[in-house]
Structures are given as structure tokens and as C-alpha cells.
Image (cartoon, rainbow, N blue to C red; front, top):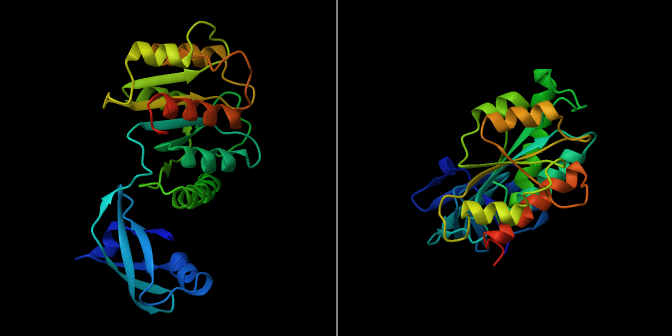
Length: 251
């Protein structure tokens, strides 16, 4: 069944309105009409069966059935702080991490970040593009929310302001503590409700020693992803998939 997000202010008294690109897709591409069934998500973790009851150019009205929790939304809330990579690699990171269940993505400016997003106009344009990618990936993967892609933050800002109960920095210099051992010791599992996890992935070239030392001062724990060196666009996906598997979010 075709699935669409509706903003909360577009839902009232069991009726919803779909406008813009989604409405055009319903009418012109899918060629759905009055009486056809679709699925609606409110972006807050609830899904609804819906019947199209009225249409107009660029506008679709639906009647919502009884809602239920979105099956595609994990209980584990993982925020990815991603060192901004070169070219369009960030597009891939966002798309795949949203599919895997990431809760939030924070583009991270580090000492070795090459892409310059210091100009507000350029940063706003990039983030708008990334948010659209997140929206499409959330719709495709049947998520219950659309993960937010934040404005870029400096490494220092991110590590000092993050308030996650679990804070992980994946670093190739760590040799002793692997992810499973760490999560075992922290007692993070499917039955533990406190699963607010922040993870940091460096850009091409990784994080420097000063950044890692500063992160440790603010309570971030260094973890290894194993003996193989992963590309920046691979590391976040691998870490997220491993966490989702460990916390039984893939059952």
C-alpha cells in the first residue's frame, strides 16, 4: 500500500489533507482517486489506514481509520554525528542511515573536514537537500518519523552540548573496546528502555588526537569497529546496523 506523511496540523477530527508533491504524486503518477486506500503516517510514530474521499488539483483529502504505532520505528534513538565528507557522499549516508533507523543526523565540521559550509546560505541549501533525502528515505522504509538533519555543528560544539545517556566515538586508534563488549558492559539491550545513543564518525582522514582527547574529557567513550579501516560513508552505516541488531531492532 502506498504510504505518505501528513504534518500534524493537516490532521483534524479523523480527516487529513495531502498537498504539494505528495498530492501530485497520488493524482498524476499513481492515478489514485476517490475510494482508493493509502497509508498515512503522522510523523510522530503512528500509522493510519486512509481512504481518499475528495481530490482537487494538488490537493487530496482522506478519511483516517484507527491508528496504531508505526512498526518501522525503532525504540532505540541513535543520533549520528557525521564528519562531513567530500562530494555527494553525505547524500548516501543520510539515505541509508534513515533506512536503518537513525533518529537524528548532525553534520559535523572537524579539523579534517574539507567541505566548507561556513556560509549560511550554502549551509541552508545543503541541509534542505539533505532533509529532503531523509524524507524520501523515511517514506520508502516505512519509518514512523522523518529523522531531522540539523545545521552543521563544530566538533567542539557537538561534544560539549550532547546530552545522550550513551556517547560513543568510533576511532581507529582504539584497540581494546569493541562495540559488543561496550554495549554488554553498559547493559544496553532490547529490554532496557534507556537507549539514547550518540555516535561520532570522523570525515575522510578521521579525527585527530586532540579532538579525541577533548571528546573523552566530555564523557565520550572510544570504540573500535574492528580491524578493518572503513570509509567514512561506510562506518556510520556499519555502526548503526550493529547497534540495531544488538538491541533487537531487526527482529
